[in-house]
Length: 439
Image 1 (cartoon, helix red, strand yellow):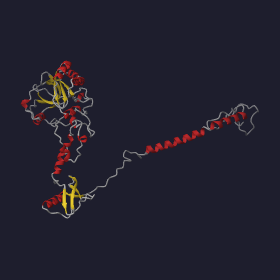
Image 2: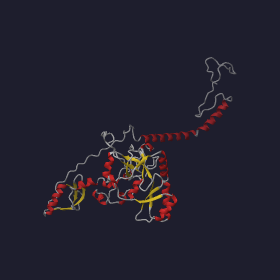
Image 3: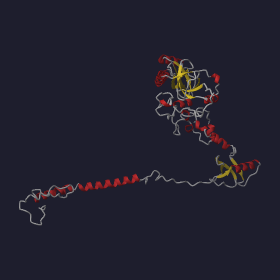
Image 4: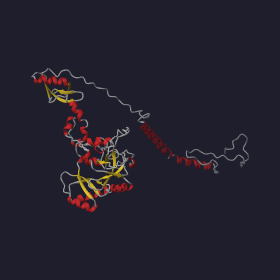
C-alpha cells in the first residue's frame, strides 16, 4: 500500500515524496537495497547488466530486460510490459551487478526474464497512472459492498490498478475457498476493467495495510521484513514466555514474527543446560527445580517444606545427576553459588535539564493560594469601611461647608485642597509664618 504522505499514491520516488523520503509504512524506504557498488569505477570494456529490478505498489518487485540500453537510475519511473497485456508503471529499485545477485537470491534464472522495459515514463503516462491510483480507494469500498450483498465470507483489503487503467488486482483474505464468479461479473459491469482476484494471508494483509505494534513502532512486515517464516509456540516455550495468545499475537492475529529474532540465541544457550532435571535426589531429600537462568548457567532448587531456593551451577547439577544414575546419593546439594548483586543506582532527576527543583511549580502554587487568602481577608475588612467614610464625609461637610478639604480617597484618608497662593483670602492676607494651605 502506498505511503500516505506521497503525492503519487503507490510507492513514490524521492522527488515525489512530501516527506523527503522519510515515510516508512510501505513507502519510499520499503524493501530498499543499498547499492554498495555505486561509487566504484567499472572497467573500460564493462557492459552493464541488462536486467533491471522494478518496484510496484506494496512489496511487489519484478525483473525486466532493458533491451534498448536506456540509462536508468534508482527511483526513475519506467513503463514496462504487463503480464496479461497492456503496460504498467513502476519505479526502478535496483540496477547493475546487484540485480544479478538478487536473481540468485530469489532463485530466478536470467533466461526466465522475458518482460521488457518500454521507455521512461512520459508526463502523459504519469498523469494516467496517478488517475488510476486515485480510483483504488473508491473501487475497494464499492467492491466490499458488492461482496456483502452477495453474502460472501471474504474481506477485500486492497486494490492495485495497472498503469494503463485496463486491469485491477483485488487482494482479499478468507478462511477457505470462496466462489466469487458472480462477484467478478458484477465488478466487471461496474468498473469496466479486467479483474484479477488474489487471495493473501493475514500476514500479507498486515504488511500491505501497515500499523503500530505493541512495541510502539511500525510493523516489521510493513517496513523491512521481506520473508515470512513460520512461528510456533515452541519459540515462546524456549524463551520461557507465558503462553498467552493475547500477548503473543500481533496485528494480523498470528504469532508475532519477533518471537524468532532471539530464538537462535536461546537455542545456543540451552545446549549446555541438562534436560529432564526436575528433581535431584540427596540424603536430605528430593530437591525440586524452581528456576533456570540459561545465560548465567545457574539452576535454583528447593527442598520440600522450605521456602529458600538453593542456586547451583550447571556442572554441579550434572554431577549430582550422574551420581543419581549410579544409585548414589550425596549428602546435600553442595556449596551454594554466590550471586553477585549490583547495588541499585539511584538516579538524580533534579537538575538534568538545568532546573532548580521539580517541585518549583508546587511552591509557586502555594504562594498564590496564600496571596489569594490575604486578598479575601482585606476585602472583608474593606466592606466595613464605606459606612465610616460616609460618616466622616458628613462631619466634614458640617465643619467645612465650602468643601475646601477635597473628596475622600478609597482608604478613608483626606485629600487636602491646596488653594492658589496669589488669590487673596476673604479675611485678608495670612499672617507671617502661617501656612497658606491651612483653613
